[in-house]
Length: 307
Ligand code: ASP
Image (cartoon, rainbow, N blue to C red; front, top):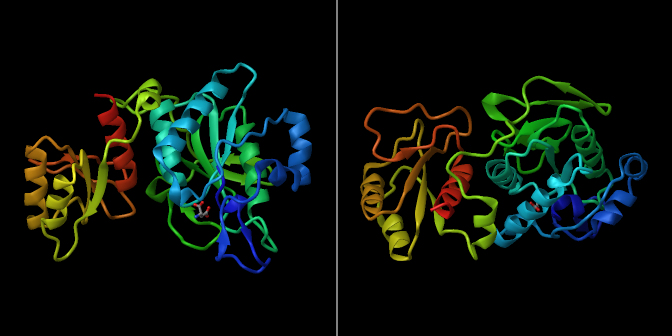
């Protein structure tokens, strides 16, 4: 899919001012002797679906990726799919694929924090680790592999803008670790089933665009103007990242309730990076306890597409 793992900078010491998605996947695989050897052992099919900076991910590309992953997984001779992806929206793609496909075979996303032209790039080892995960006999569902850590699609979040180990599974903790090509597992793989109440792959393919869903924060001094402007601009769904256990500034809540009364669904998540929302009595918005704001947005869009 591109990303920093396929990124190129003007010098080997430049880790920040580079262009993501510059180098073809064939070339990336070719550059790693151990991957080239694995390619013979595992009959590795190398294919580019897109070559983008994942900050620019859009619906058409996600839909194309989901379709291609589903096609490949349906083939008897395909054991697993590894996706090289940018780090910025990796957690959104991971959640999208798990929610939509809930695959019984492993789909392993991997990435890099340094461009391929760096003096010591992290992409090659991450690709090798991802291949080790993909080949594990018990692997299933969508996972992400970065810096030797295996994260489940439901839990993975990018938590650091620069470190090589930029991802966390928060309170849930990782599924396991890749150590010298071997897996040390500490908990279960993601379930081989998608999210309930979401659109089918066919509905996603048939849609020409995502439903228009935005994420808004609650914060000190929040008011209703942003919500009113979004309603006027035709927003079809809203996710509010509340403070703490899903509390929302009273002025913003009033505007959100008005939007909801007009038929615009509003999902309540939290801006806290760890833990889950605990449901409160008489909550006036739909509380999505175990979804981050970006996951809640994808869940709401898939829900709207199913109607
Ligand atoms: N902007 C890049 C991307 O998400 C960052 C990365 O891959 O680390 O594609």
